[in-house]
Image (cartoon, rainbow, N blue to C red; front, side, top):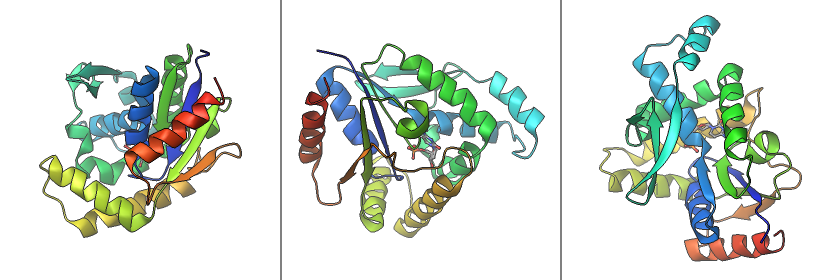
Length: 222
Ligand code: DC
């Protein structure tokens, strides 16, 4: 079977990563969470109080950052300079700053280069905002996932509460709206549905229905 690249883009907390992980595991492909990379850079910038208006400080900081992923207890886990930061990058503090960091071109070009290197042998499912439009414009399958905002906020809220975070639904909802706005309106690589991406609205689809739909689309491209 031919190995392909599958790009999954969409709004914040629409279930992209759940679908991407399930699809990668079904196909025995590598799964890459590109949002985790932007979150890890944001965490580093927060910890080192990097001024987002100072190009030189950003370049110096980016040169100090190494990101990699490992599978731990079956979960894809993000490492920042060899430290497991999987939990630290999911906090509301990081969520509140990540879109601003992700709008910086210097940050994007470093991460896009890394993402392309990971995908060079294909057999990969990557999720994010610009995977089908910028990172892999020639990806064999591009999905653009979305769901109604209120439904996305409730899912995200329940996920965070389940992980033990103390959050309020209204804060989660306003964070989603803010991130969607910044992600869709930034100058460099805004969140857009690529012309050849297939729209998947999962507001009323369960995980299995979504996976089946995606697998069907993959089979037509292998
Ligand atoms: O997928 P996520 O919510 O963890 O992503 C966090 C942020 O990173 C998101 O608000 C926008 C940014 N991002 C991006 O700009 N490009 C990507 N390919 C992935 C994420």
